[in-house]
Length: 294
Image: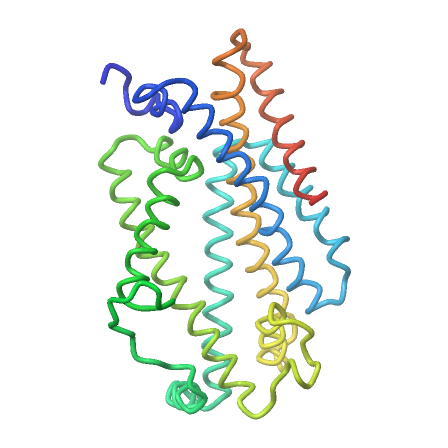
C-alpha cells in the first residue's frame, strides 16, 4: 500500500478498497450511531446524580456537556487522551471501593455468593448449541466476537487512538492492554450487581419505593454502603461522570475528524490550519448541543 498506515483515517480505507460512495456511506452510519448513542452516555450519569443529590437531570446534563465541549475544543485529541486516563482511574477506583466496602458490610464474599445462589441469580453456563436460546456459551461467544471487533477494529473512536501511537507494534500492545482492562471492568460491573442482590436480600428497593427505576439501584446501593462515610458518595458520582465524559469527549473528537476528512475534504477545497481548527471546534459545539437537545 503506497499510503503509510499512520496517515490513514479509518473510512479512507473503504475508499481505497472500494470507492468514495462506500466511504461516505460508512461515515454517515457512524455519524448517526454517534448522534443516537452520545445522549444516552450523558443521561445515565445524570440519572445517578439525580438519585444521589435530587438535582433535576435537565439541569445536570447541559452542565456536563458544556464542560466536555470546552476541554475537547481547547485541547483536541491530546486533551481527550489525558482526560480519559484520569477519568478511567477515578471510575475504576470508585467502583472498587464500593464493592470492597459493600462486601465487608454484608458479611464477606461467601455471603454475597450464597444469597445470589439462593435467589437463583447464579447459574451454570448453558452449553446448548441452539442459537435461539438467549444466553449460551456459543451464542455469547459469537455475539461478543462481532460486537468487540466492531467496537475496536472498525470504529473511528478507537482508530484515532491507535493512529496517535508511534508504530504498529505499540498499537498491538495497547489492544492487549485494552482487553485486560475491559475484562476487569466487566467483572467489577457484574460483581456490583451480585452485591446489590446480596445487600437488598430481605428488602426489594423497587417494591418499597426506595428506588423508582432499576437504573437507580446502583446509586442507591452506593448511598447505603457509604452512609457512614460522608463524601464518598460524591466519589462514586465522580466515577460515573468520568466514564460519561470519557465517552462523550472521544465521540465528539472522532465525529469532528469524520466530518472534516470524509464530508468536507473530498468535495470542497482544502482548508487552512486556522479554518480547520474553526471547523473542528464548530462540529464539537454543534454535536454537543444536539446531545443536550436529545
